[in-house]
Picture 1 (cartoon, rainbow, N blue to C red):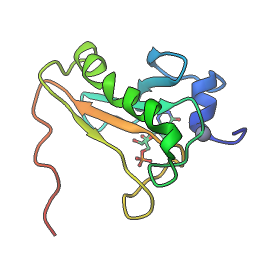
Picture 2: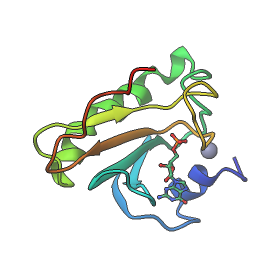
Picture 3: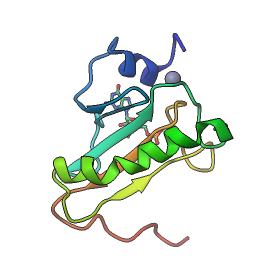
Picture 4: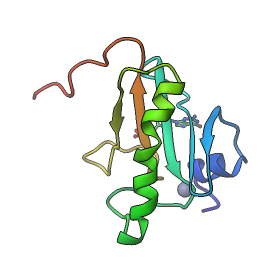
Length: 116
Ligand code: 5GP
Ligand code: ZN
């Protein structure tokens, strides 16, 4: 996708603080970290969200999760982390290219969600 922010980051057209790359995925520091460790893992292929991913995307989805522990450990969160994939309007997804947040740091990230 020519006009997608995260496609541009994956291509290197927009700079990012890359932490990992292979043929299918790209990972980098979030520009506005919510915790000391805050990485984003994205497929290089433009997939809008988990709501539009297809069965053919299963390998890349698995790979995004499979690298999470290594990336968290290498980037300041060796004792666990949280993966968040905001999806669609209800999930408050702001960037329309599928991404997994990996958040953590030396201290626990806190309870999952505030009850409403
Ligand atoms: P969402 O709300 O869509 O799940 O999360 C989007 C995330 O992308 C936010 O945490 C935001 O800080 C991050 N982000 C937005 N624009 C950029 C950018 O240009 N570079 C980087 N590294 N992160 C970005
Ligand atoms: Zn994209």
